[in-house]
Image (cartoon, rainbow, N blue to C red; front, side, top):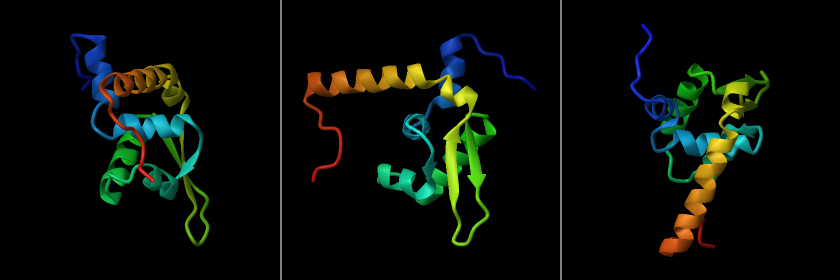
Length: 112
């Protein structure tokens, strides 16, 4: 059954909403990443949650998982064409977040 939406934003948020989905998409917008790379870029996400979110994004047709079939495992993730169509949206969120951080004095990134 196809869900009915009352607003296009409702559909967009349903597909890319949540705490981690847009962050994963933003990292994959930069290019192909292995699971471990994604994990290092998002230290606040658990392995279980990252795996779950990647599977959801794959099921939604936004991410492709490529298993090279090697030992040790070499699995990569990249955006599909549908996922790549989100690039301007993700960039707008990035730009807004950068501006918001500057306006509010919020620190972004790891201290080090």
